[in-house]
Image (cartoon, rainbow over all chains, first blue to last red; front, side, top):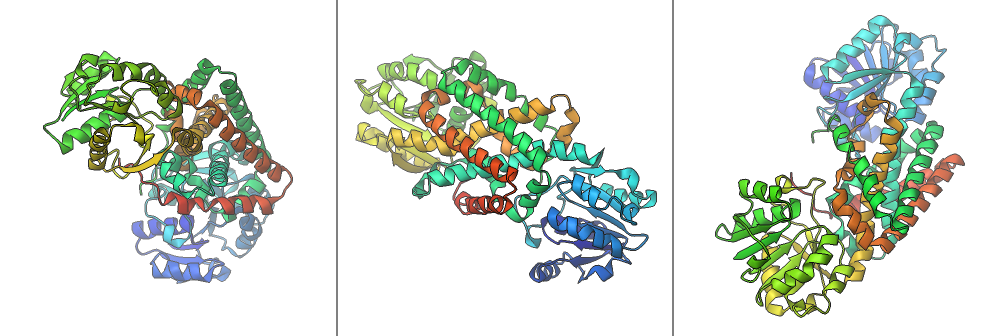
Length: 286
Length: 286
């Protein structure tokens, strides 16, 4: 298989690593706006060669893993130059606007809208890891708009790297992903901000921080270049989840202020059921 | 050494395991209001025998790891029955009220106020793990009020199990721990609540949740019995941290609503420095 990965960071690099491991004879061409990322990916053996959009015509599969604002600009151009038999998949964390921007593209049938739910808080080619996608969920939107033969090819690859497939429409994807992903990132960033602001003159205080703080604030290490356009594209859903989250925090604070610790206990007990829910979430092996 | 552990769950059980590993000839007596916890701890070999407060007079060290509301009631009684040469240490996550309740106790010099910053989101004797304290910080408050010989004995034990010691007054402890621990727990519980409420009729949605969500919501599995009294005892500090956190969330939401994505990016970039800060936090090996 001849595969082109556009955006050779954590997501694209991990995809390339899995492909190479499963099919050592695949040729993987990398495209990235950062020349140093490309050099790094070459040196790490993640890609076999550097390419450009001229490489797309003969590709069996193009995997596009770039920030969602760049995706909006590049995806139509990528489809313009893709071959008639090329399947183009993306890894964008939003789906509605992405699907809209190519809705009337003459090569819409060459595109499969995907969101592989996988990642870590790190970025760049050196963050790429083998097996990142194993056991993880890949949300596919508007599958009926992709040519059947091309669906099959992409699905076979996703199956090979161990992904579970779920089908969803772009609006439902964006609504639910705001809760289970975008909100977590904002809660973590704002937790980090609150603590850094308060403790900026007291460096020793972080000696007091344990693994619980580390876990809760982990996502605040994430890339602003990646996350700003996600919040922009999913603005309405993100604002709605934030409103509900803020309201829950205000209510909880009020219970503490009112010394209603019976209800404080009850709120936490009710939320403990997250234990059962989390059992179903596959973790990244590091 | 003759050691009594009062409250034989994750914290007390892990302490007992380390003591036993380092000093196989130590006798460890367990006290717990739950008979089934005691039976479990005996069966797991975490303790050598069950005891009661009559066991305290001849103990070299008493480790008290019970919820902080129980600690307020029990600590004076524990000191009443402790021997003249017994050092009593606690593991409470709040320190001001605990120190106040024994401030004028005739055996105040037998008590050393401690907060070992270690734990997981699990509880009970079966959650106890070896090496939990290795490389972690133990905050000691009002050390000057503990008899010098007894300080030495307790510090030797903490050193043996690998803890770093930091000295702090109880008020400073409670203020800072609200930021780096108590707030993380509330942000996580309310994140869990927001998502569960929204998605209660859509079980499949949790297929969309990745390891980022899992990490951010991990603390929402914590025990309400342990955390309710912590929030109660540290009410003023917790309310203050919550107010700042809520304000930061409101500001961030406003930036998104106003389409000021340059500042959204900047807020996240500024918070990325948490990477450097987190490098200093020792993680629990599981």
